[in-house]
Length: 323
Ligand SMILES: Cc1ncc(COP(=O)(O)O)c(C=O)c1O
Image 1: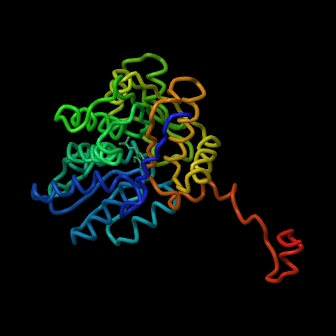
Image 2: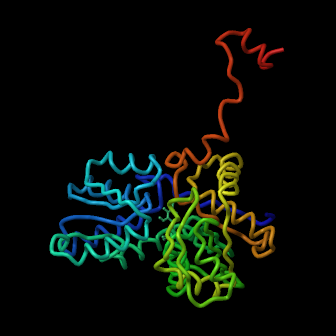
């Protein structure tokens, strides 16, 4: 990259992912609408955030997750001591079950943030776009690279930029902004549809280490496709080794330790530059949406102490730290 490259680091929110934005909007609305219990279907980060918000608000919650989530994501939900249901199945199974539960009498008073109050949850993603404009001094970048699971975040960052221009708070860049989407090779249905020029998204069974992005049947996938096509952007996907490299590259070049979703985004940024799809001279914002401490296993085998020594000068000398 030759042009300015910014990392919008959204991993330092109260539960360490961008999901705190969407949950605070959705659950504020849910309380106003009279719901008395909070819930969600989650790939991990949403579960953390719903349980924490429920604890803070003193409201019961019940969150549903796939049974094979990373320990870091399970503990950081369970610690809030609200109901946590691990399902023997994929996120798409979890989501389908939640869509059925929401119709039952027992769940009538329950706001599922990404099911029956989803419009509020979706609009909450726009704040990430607003904040980028604000932090750039009320300007928009020329290119943004965004991780995709359901595709909602990408769609809503584009919507945020559109709204800011419409109300006259910012001017669009001379050639508009271009939206780029990032998925993993283990779960790439939106990117594949773009590559194939398709008008429909064929669901996949997700695999791979980027579990927070493992939504095989993405609810906002078609909208994400539309935004990327309309703005002249592109999408790509990265395999597990590339994701691990992406995490390490971001860490050693910026000091930001990302979870696997951030690794996906950085790895895809690199591919987009190499393939010429992304202009290396244009101002670009890449989004880190989650904290590396939640997915330690992704890099645990690749990093460790540089030296292991006895606690003595001799030990330091023997290791070559002293001459
Ligand atoms: C860390 C992280 N980044 C990005 C996303 C993608 O969000 P969306 O479903 O809005 O595409 C998720 C979804 O769970 C996530 O956990």
